[in-house]
Image (tube, rainbow, N blue to C red; front, top):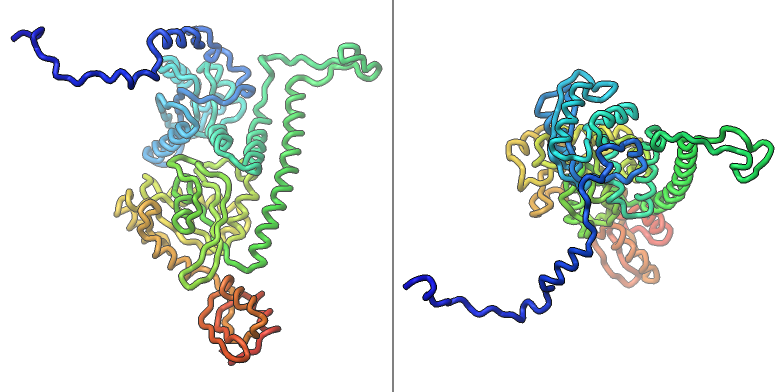
Length: 481
């Protein structure tokens, strides 16, 4: 039997399933009416003089780093982190190169010869952006752009762009914008080399005598507007800082211990907060997924209340502009009674994460004097040998997995042990008409025993100083505890 005589045993095609789909003609019409990109008309590879005025657009990038100290593994880990940052910003990484130098070149960061080699790599890969693993001076950015003929940004600008994408609250957006303007101000350049001035006289609208003169150049006008905007943002952040300090003062007035969750970005701080309190904070496997601090209330196993604050993540060489702009947010760490220092146990170099975070702690007033618990997260994906080394080196340290819940109960026990005790033990007879004090004891303290008598309620509890003073005025002591 030949092929033409074969019986078709396939099920009949259900035509009704395709009724809602456009036919070929409609698809062709939609394609014909759509915008089409004409190859060869882009000025991206030639005109880089106005780069700071264009929106940062990362699509196809080449990474370049300068290895000045440490081992080759350290240099590669730094570039791998830069790759994650670039991908978080929404780009496609095409190539990554590292140069061994004693220090970065003052002109082009990597030297004139290597800059020409980098230009060849950019041309061969079709990249539109070069990302440097370091903070470049305005002169280095300009001269490297002139050689490679594409937009050049540094690590600081990349991190600022990620923060701008992820900021959600009004305070977070203002903080990021202030940091971006602070970074941009010394890097302004003339618009396409145009330094024309706003002349006076009739050209200035007839301002007359005293209005004539060279006036401001375009770059001077831009700088003035940036300074005015920065001053306005500082005032706004100052007002929002007052509101944050008021909320913090209320928590302190209640004498509730505060715990701050701090650590490297993407170490799992938000996941840990969700696991401990059920906060429902956004969790994403990305760098700087959450920027806005979240404060939630929790209780120890013995009933003591405390607050947990999730703070912004840190990273190596965190731009000083961000540290300054987010100072009000980072004060949550400085005002805490206990710090949960979260580190990614599955990271290739967790020790460097710990060191980078502690460098930022040094810039926060009072943070170094606060007790610290090292929480080694992602134990389900980490090397047991690395976990053993970290737990031996860091004391106290707890190994957990926020994803699976392993080690969370042990962490709760350590928090309970390390939290400072502000409460005092009392055993008093509370009149029945002051049942509100009994309710406060249940809500704010740790009730050990309650006994109802003819004259009132005998309360045996550990309470905070504010409630203790109120009980002393109202209740009668039963016995000295």
